[in-house]
Amino acid sequence: MSPVGTTTPPPTTGQYGNPVLWEDLADADVFRVGDTYYYSASTMHYSPGAPILRSYDLVHWEFAGHSVPSLDFGSKYDLNGGRGYVRGVWASFLNYRKSDKTFYWGGCIDFNKTYIYTATSVEGPWSRHTTIDNCYYDAGMMVDDDDTMYVSYGNTNISVAQLSADGRTQVRTQQVFSTPSSVGTLEGSRMYKINGNYYIFLTRPANGQYILKSTSGPFGPYTMHQVLLDLPGPVAGGGVPHQGGLVQTQNGDWYYMAFQDAYPGGRVPVLAPVTWTSDGWPVVQTVNNAWGSSYPLPNIPASTRQVKSPTGTDTFSGTALGPEWEWNHNPDTTKYTVNNGLQLRTATVTGDLYSARNTLTHRILGPSSTATVTMDYSAMHDGDRAGLAMLRNSSAWIGVRRDGGQTRVSMVDNITMDGNWNTTATGTEVASAPVSGGKIWLRATADIRPGSGRQAHFSYSTDGTNFTPLGSAFTMDSSWQFFMGYRFALFDYATQSLGGSVNVSSFDLATP
Image 1 (cartoon, rainbow, N blue to C red):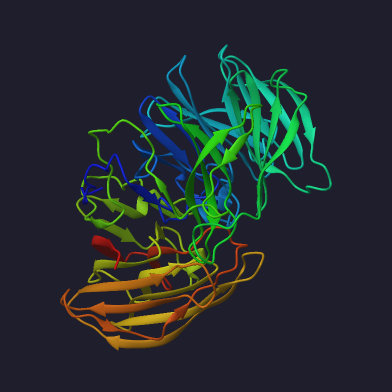
Image 2 (cartoon, rainbow, N blue to C red):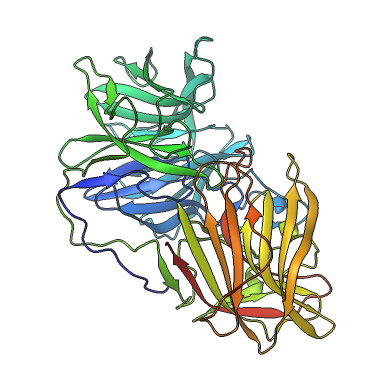
């Protein structure tokens, strides 16, 4: 990853705004180790999975690593004999165990088994620690004062499992709570021990947050308390803040990091201060009976360390991708190279972008942002398609097509999936223009403010300065069922035979 712009040291007084990072980062698990805050999120079918973000003030965040190096859960995650769209890494846990100075990530895959990965640094290397033959659905981990690890999990019926001292096996599991029918569904567990009480923090999707409290140990009994219901969120047009987790600062203050549905962009993190009642229940601090669009900055000792800005230019320096990047399903590692530039070699013969391996994705920065890619297409083969896409269950792209020895820049729309994530249309060319010279700049500008009718626009340049719009505006799908929001995506696939390639020398992300 190239060094991009760094933020100036954040102010120690003033206000922060919500969302704290306008990117698709759902199902947060958030915690602090010393003076560093960590944040883990869901990634579904993207690989590597479960990104870890890092902050020193709870407000400014940077990508630091991934807990799941590869979706090593079957060939469908390789786009080989199947597809894993909207499966993979769902709400999972990430925590730190001081006794062995180890980070533990765990998640249930395909409603089947729970996989636990460990590392002594969030940057990795991460490795498979164990597989447990029980689905810890929407799980949260708590390390007790005696170093015992517990996991809360479940949907409606909430259970707590005790792990062995080495974290490799389940010692015991027990249902501890059954959600009243008046509440409906509770899931998205996070587990804490606070002032001697055990808590399980749960969401009522997608408009409420509840908490269970036990004064008698991790296995209960638990009593339930409503934290919020139908609370207006800070992002106009978005949903109710919910799910996520609680975190305590060095100075003893508490915060709740939730996410707010904000499609077509996805689910974005919002932060609010929390106080506690005398009888041990959390209270979210609201502004005019809503989750505030801004609050005073957390009272946290200033850090000399800075985090990387989400905007800037990646020139793919070094020999590895930065942690901001995730592939659509697992890549074929023999078909790309990072070495002061990114070379994508065609990895699939297909006419379907959704079945093409080695499509590399980057989250869109809201409320709107522009991605510009510099690409050398001189080594493309006949039948190849390469470029920059707006990727989701309804997609479009701008890119280069090579056919019959001729190249042209093309804008393609109407790439769609059905509700079972099967491809229903592989795209229609809306506009094109002949290009030559081997080098092109491709650009997509996306408005991801919550709501229907949001659009992306495509343009291209042959000199890097003067950009020409191409095709029609692409209207994004704002439904939630795909869960993940739109992403910018770099792709290169063959429709005839493998062997061609493109080189991407830079990816620039800018906000207006």
